Amino acid sequence: MLVLVCLVASSCQSGSSPTRGSEDTAQTKSAHSRQTWCVARPDSAWKRILNGHVVRLSRRISIVPLAVANDGRSFFAEINSKAYSGVIRINALSSRYKKIKRFSDPVNYQASGDFDGRWLVWAEYHSLYDPDDFTVWSWDSRTGRLRELGAATRSPSGNFWPSALQAPIVHDGYATWEQGSGPNGLGDVHVVKLATGRDRIVRRGHTGGPFLVNGPRVIWPESMKAGALTIMRTVDARTGLMVATPPALRNLRGGIWPASNGKSLMYATDIQKSLWWSPSLEVRPRRIFRTRGYNLLKIPLNEIWARYTSFSIPYRTYLVDTVAGRYVRISPGGWAITGPKALVLLTPSAKKANHAITDIFFLPLKSLPPIPPCGGG
Image (cartoon, rainbow, N blue to C red; front, side):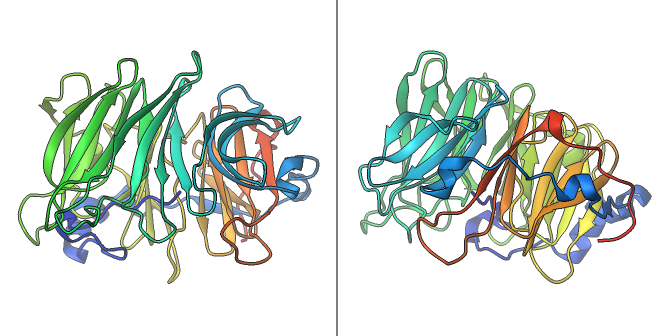
């Protein structure tokens, strides 16, 4: 479920970051970039917020959320049990679930994906140790059609070409992902029109993981020569033609870890230590959070809904009100996914395990109390 877009796409490594000079040029010279969101101290309402919202099935079976549906009562998940392991849609209230695709290897297979209101798209990873071995699938929630969209390919040596550590993204009926295709970090940016299943390679180069915004447009970081910081490049998803990169990202150099609902944008830079926000792709982002020596754990993609989103650092998960500019801790760890009508929170497991059983909470957004005024952590 983690998303990492590399600083230099030809040498993708976790921990890469922009140089200080490039980040200053792109971001910090703007006065409003130094403004931050503020942290609120949970009041009694927030301390009770999880009461009564646990998904009962999560207390006896291993479940990992993938995406939140748009009906206010269900979410998509990976489930691992003796009876069935695979991708499901689960009713959070009844704990009943619909099977979507079974894993042929319950021990080693995992999934990570996205939902746009109709289409669920995910990468099915076939190894616990090799993230470059995967297939990409789509499921149409209207018709129930399951389709394989793509699959990782092997080099002449028999190993899979390295790909970006990023799950597929879906928005407005299109899906996109980056897939390794050659030596020295060469990769392809794939775009699929989900109604037809047509897969178009819109770019081959030293590319990082792409994401989608309104248009629909596909945006990705790309290193234009060996060792160079990436720049952001954009194509029209419908035609595959290059178009202008939105102003919010036009001057950005170096790697990002992005989240977008198509019109607003949040991303991390500086080895995932700085968090940036823009309410519009036409507005220069400002820094709204900086960690103290540790990395952000997760930023959900296409999951800034209405006014809410979330982010996590070690031992804390926060819910953000982007309108009020406040965030509040909702869990001592784990991570959350925000949808159009609800959020799903996965809490930390008591012990390390490949398929750990841990509490999952499902919170309708309409049930959330206002985040209190700031003044403490």
